[in-house]
Length: 129
Image 1 (cartoon, rainbow, N blue to C red):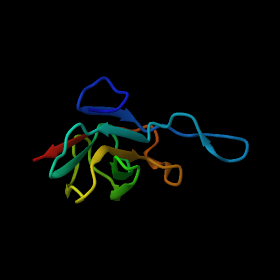
Image 2: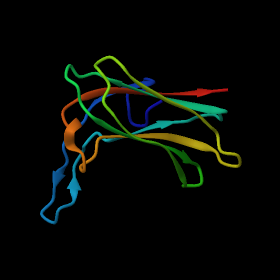
Image 3: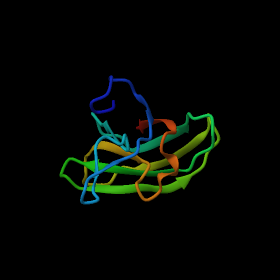
């Protein structure tokens, strides 16, 4: 379930542009980060991304397995350009021995590549036994 979301298992968002502070730091809500809570142990994790916009866009996609000890593992770092209604499945990613996954984090969009600003997408995570 997404953290802070409606409790659904799929999240739909639009990539927002960052607001830039006078010293050049990105501020404000960009909709880049979404955390999915993991409430039990799974053997593998599959991550899904689907483009929702009517025009093609480049989406920088990063994803992380976040562990209960505060560490994380980046499992996705790709730039994809899917047609509307299609996307990508990432994984399956095996659970890390000795670690407990507490969240799966998606980061869509980046200030270094603003080409996806304004475009919408759908993401979800599936834990598999």
